[in-house]
Image (cartoon, rainbow, N blue to C red; front, side):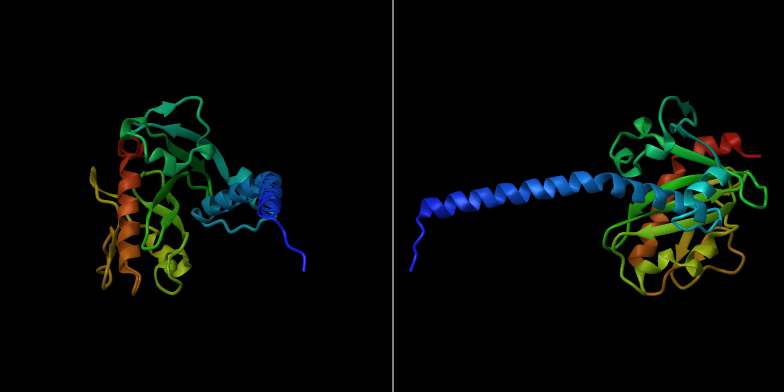
Length: 233
C-alpha cells in the first residue's frame, strides 16, 4: 500500500485550491458581462411594467427606447444633478448616504394613452430580504399611474404576492397627497375602506411584508416631495 507524506498532501491540496480558485475567478469574470446585461434588461422590463407595457427579453430594449423619453437625477431639494446617469444609480447604495447627498433618479415616459408620467424607483425591506420596484405618477405628481414590485426571498403565496397583478393593480389611481400634505399609500390589514384614495388591501398572511412595502413607499417617495410639489400640473 502506497503512503503519502504530509508534505505531499499539503502541496497537492494547495495546488488544487489555487487551480479551483483561478477557475472560479475566470468563470466569474467571463460571466460578469452577461449577468450585468441580464440585470439591465430586467430593470428596463420592470420599469415598463410600471407604466403597463408588457415586454419580453427580446423586445424590452426596443420598447424601453420607445416609451422612456428622458432620465435624470435630482437631489432632495428638487434640483437636477448634472453629470449622473439615472439608470446606473443603485438605490441601496444611495440610502447609505446622508439624505442631502443622495441621488434620486427620475424617468419620464409617455405610455400608449399619451399621458406624461414619471417613474420613481423604490427599495426597502420585506420579511426575509429586500423588496423593490417602481412607481409611476401622472403629470399631477399625485396620482399613481402604475406600479411594479419585486422581492428577493418573500414567502410564496404570502409576502411574494406583492409581485402579482392582483396586488399591484390596487395602486392605480391612488393619491400620494392630501392637498399639499404627503400621505403616501397605506397597505391596510383587513382591507381598505371603499373609496379610500390612499389605501389598498394588505396581503393576507403577509402582514410584515405589507408593512415593509408601505414603509418603503413612504420613505422613498417622500424624498421627492419638493420636486413633486414644484412640478405638478
